[in-house]
Length: 507
Image (cartoon, rainbow, N blue to C red; front, side, top):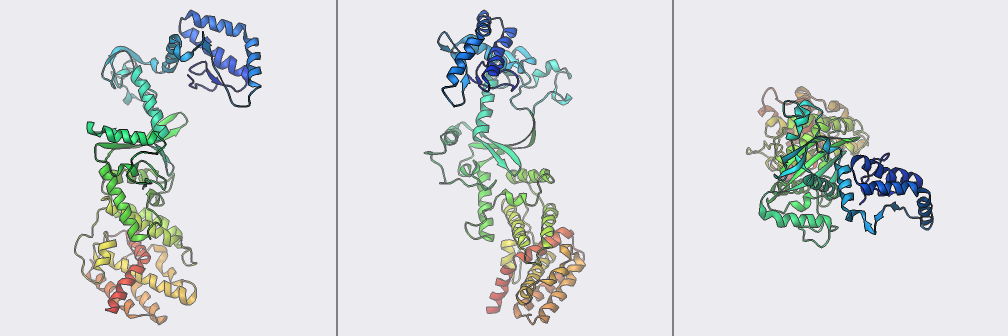
């Protein structure tokens, strides 16, 4: 039985990895018996300590001789009368006493365990398996803020404590994942007894090297990261199981809960995978750029907007509503940063705008970003707005979007004829207001005429934009960020707008 303890003190058993044999022997082996003999009254332990000290030189010499025959790393332990330590009951008692020593500082006798519900000889009240539960703040202490009575909060017997420790080790070995600067644990939860078979299958899959188990896909997919995780397996299960997602932050020996997402059902996971597939089909070629939460993380900088990013994660899994007004400032901060290099041919702005579009469509499909475009849209671009424009429910938003597309067509012509896009300077670094946007249309039309490229398709588009401007309210209820985001989306989907006007032209 090997279980490491303090690097400077003893282990929980007199079994230790050998560093230098003298230090290991003195500190980890003899030191273990010294400490146990101070805690417990076992005459045999005192006899063993006496022999280990008395025969130290002879034992060390024999150990050195054995170590010289092998270059492998080694453990040192004891057998007593030919028996392993595990088989010796006094040792088991000492082992458990050392493990529970710290937890036993706050305990009670003959009380009911909050886990198993049985009355036990001893329950502890300061379980240290998860270190986010502490009693160093008044709010954690019941019994009139008397710490001696704090065991009443969560009394746990020693048998249940051992099971909780094993549970944590299992979860951290098989159900821990990395997530854009965070670490999270996926904890399955049985909701009804009929789900035991599904839970057994899931646990067998995790513990048997992920082989020879009936799963629902050859390769489990994920939308959390680009790597496989448990969610891909869960999407086809029924709702007899749920998942808890626990995001923990470790600072030295302390732990802090950043986010706990409870009761994520397989039906919800299936909805999210469907939203992922729709998003990919609308914006990317099959197999290219699979959507995942990294698209969202792009706009919530690590160490700066962590709180908002985790809020989005929670709202996605629990299907809580967020508005475009929440996302627009985060989108535009990144888009504006890349926009300055757009004139020189850098594609970062284009790629990042496409990512923002993907986030918007995914959140709409997932029921988080409320789709406002449910009203019947008339005109040439009705089908386009129905597919991509869930947020473009008003004439002003549609006009801004189409103006972005027309502007991009002009920039493409400039790039083709001049090798640059000087008209980018007219876009004010994507900080345009209502007046600037309305004033942009005649500038774009004038520049197209100057290049002798004001074709019938451009004329149709300009007429539609003018009509929508006239149909809009006198004062737009749009922030600068929202307005410029819809404009950037139009720029990015100009090829789709071009398809619409080209088809009209052909007809």
